[in-house]
Image 1 (cartoon, one colour):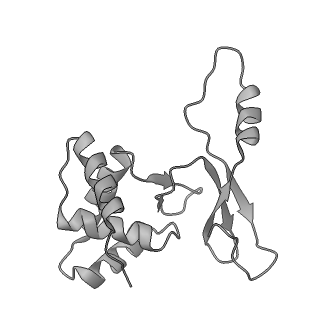
Image 2: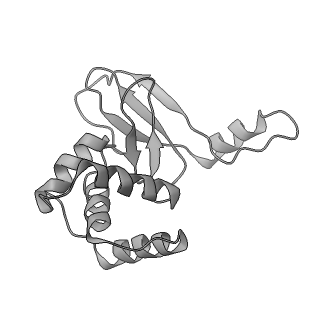
Length: 149
């Protein structure tokens, strides 16, 4: 079930869209609600199916356009694992991803500041990273989801 945005989430969405020269539409609000209501790194098809629960007439093209706009406005990040469909992540804090090869689920893994600093320290002189993307692939050793799923 998709939840409606609370006032803080709606204001964040509007501010980011406005900064990117975009406007808030009911479709964008519905797609953003899908992304933050269940932070499971959905694919476009999964977002489309969930968004149609509240907006049955929404097209797949609209979902693609909304997601592209969100990426361009810095509201979500694309998560790509090899040749699999792109997934979308609304967690903008520095973090890594763990892809469970048995289930296909993607989990957020928090990266402590000291790990990020250590990674930046190994860059050659004169190089600065704007983004660090780390992906782990493997299998969960238990059936319990990690705390940041």
